[in-house]
Amino acid sequence: MAYRKIEIVTAPREPHFVGDGFRVHNFIPSGFRLDMERMNPFIMLDYGSKFHFPPSEQPRGVGVHPHRGFETVTIAYKGKVAHHDSAGNSGIIGEGDVQWMTAASGILHKEYHEENFSKTGGEFQMVQLWVNLPAKDKMSPPKYQGLTHDAINKYSLAGNAGVIEVIAGQYKDVKGAASTFSPVHLLNAKLNKGAKADFSFPMNFNTGLLVVEGSVVVNGEEAVKTDHFALFENEGEEFTVEALENAVVLILSGEPIREPIAAHGPFVMNTRQEIIQAFEDFHSGKFGTLED
Image (cartoon, rainbow, N blue to C red; front, side, top):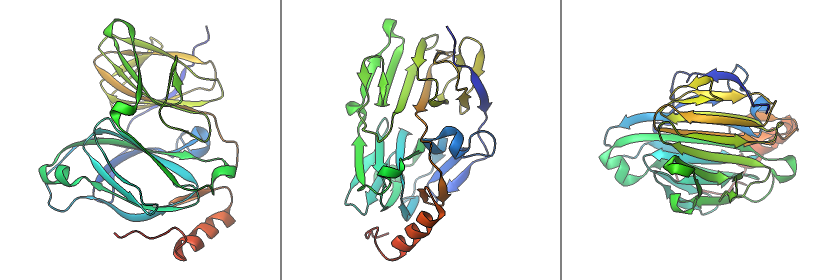
């Protein structure tokens, strides 16, 4: 069997704040092998490693801002976030929940610490992932998928070794809860110490993993520590992940969208002209309205 080997393991970069509520390490796009083209359809990954926010009467977060041309996926491990957008969607993402927002033709949204979480403070840990859309879908209507932890389908590993939460795509015979525009697999592997799980994705799919808790060994030979990201080669299909201690691992694999990428700030399109049009549409109010 030809295992899919690790190409690089990347330590978390220095954190920065997005707004005043999200302290993140950026893995995608970075300057070393993790650019938008290399990981397409995953064109941005910000990881908010575990961080304690003190109580605050004024919820921290990010005010109203636009997006076009892709989807935002927020995965909550600790803490709670409140979401509102110009399509009329709103919701609270709590521990174990996932918010999958399709910006597509254009949307305004804002994200803040949920009010009660803000007042009490506590540990906060989340991932935000941007998933690219094919050109034919970039101008489709916005939509919103709020996935509670209970609604996410799960595969139980034998011998009480752990569970694979299938957010999107498929693991064994379990299908993910989220609908996607191109083939994407997004899994949370929650493994008990000593447990081993095997994964298989098509060779051409861009694949990586982020160790959210604990530490693991991949293919029995390469260790990946907490808060580190591993990028896999596009050779071989199968790999194994073994937990050296109780671990949570986010695994992402997707078919690359082989189209030009033109990205500027909150817009990801195929040409520079489409980016200019996005700014014009935003400033002319075509993304709707949303109070800050």
